Length: 210
Ligand code: SAH
Image (cartoon, rainbow, N blue to C red; front, side):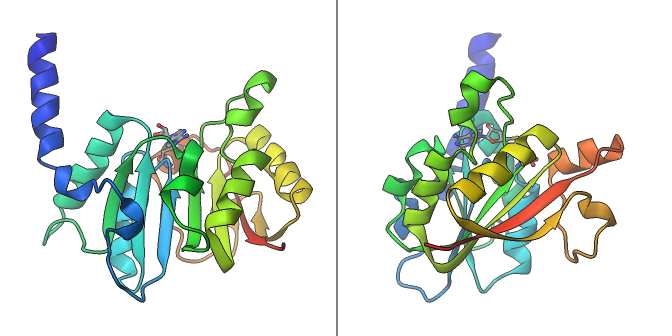
């Protein structure tokens, strides 16, 4: 049974392999379109809708868990016309993201409902830990920005401190996104789950000041 399940998984993954370039930094070739990256795309609703709605940009969705990124790719392929030309995927850990993309090549990074790692001794694993912020800075262009949202208050507070300690400029901070003026929000799978339980969604934008 387990072997069979594995075989089906391998077949499903093989059907998406063309969306998983080994070198995501150059998959779109020579292009003037700015590059935007989501780290931890989960099942992919956000990045798929975002890519469809923004044909003037290219998008890479990064996800650590193979079975999860497979669902995201299947979602993109199920669209009428298949996966949009401006969306590709990278299966792996974002902890070396500054080796994956060249300096100043990214226009925006999305962090949506990143794992909170609530234990203090795991703080360095949080995707808004200052070590990550410094990696992001290296690959972000001059006016690039990070869009971050979460249901987790502890992670949001931690992130505010990390962004400030690393001298980022914050704007559009919301402690209740769904009851704010922010327009055009695209819900993620986690966002729908948590907000349907009545939990507020926290959001901010961060720009590089250095
Ligand atoms: N953004 C999605 C999923 C949120 S859950 C949503 O809002 O619905 C967080 C996701 O980030 C998980 O799928 C997890 O596997 C992925 N993730 C966590 N750490 C990561 C890392 N270091 N690199 C890439 N993906 C990571």
